[in-house]
Image 1 (cartoon, one colour):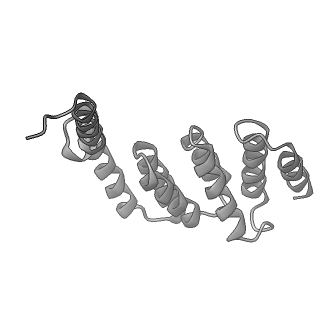
Image 2 (cartoon, rainbow, N blue to C red):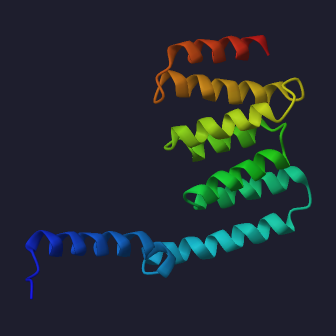
Length: 155
C-alpha cells in the first residue's frame, strides 16, 4: 500500500479551502451577505413598485449597487435600458463599476451601440467621457482616449 505524499495532501487541502471560500457567499455563512441579500430583495421590490421608467432605472441602480459580479452588470444594463436618455443613470453605472474597468468598458460600448447618439446628448457625452477616462487611466490606450474625446466633442 502506498503512503500519501505530503505535496498531494497540501494540494488537496488548498483545493478544499479554495472551494469552501468560493461557495461561502451562497451558503450564507457571512452576516454581510445576509444583510445584502435582504437589501437586494427590498431594492427589487422597489423596482417592481416603480411607476415611471426613470424611477425604475434609479431603483435598478440601487439594487445593482448592492450586488457583485455578473448580477450587477446585468442590473445596470437593465437600468440603462429603462431610462436610456438619463445622464444620471450613466453616472451611477460609472461609479458602481469603477473598480471593474473591463466590465464598465463592455457595458458602455453596449449602451452606445444600442441607441441613437442624438436622442440624449448629455447621456451620450457622459458615456463617451467615461470611456475616455477609462482609456486614459486603467485601460491605458491613448489612441482610443483621443478618439473618445473627439467623439464627445462632436456630440
